[in-house]
Length: 68
Image 1: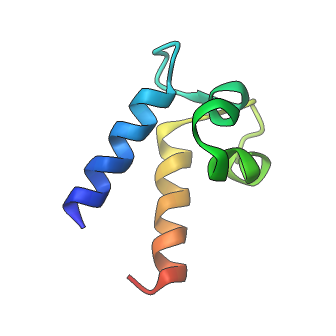
Image 2 (image 1 turned 180 degrees about the vertical axis):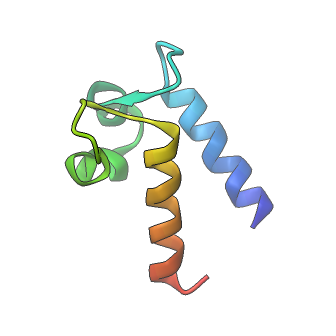
């Protein structure tokens, strides 16, 4: 599980091409197709970018759905 978390963090870091600490729609479209598909649902505050806390919440929900 630690490796999976590390891998996800690395993918998010690589997707954040402008280095602002957020994933915007364009970055998601380019590097994270599953995130891009659900972008509007994940963007809880509807500011057009996914914050680390929004991404963490999404990951927790995904783990719950998978029963982990």
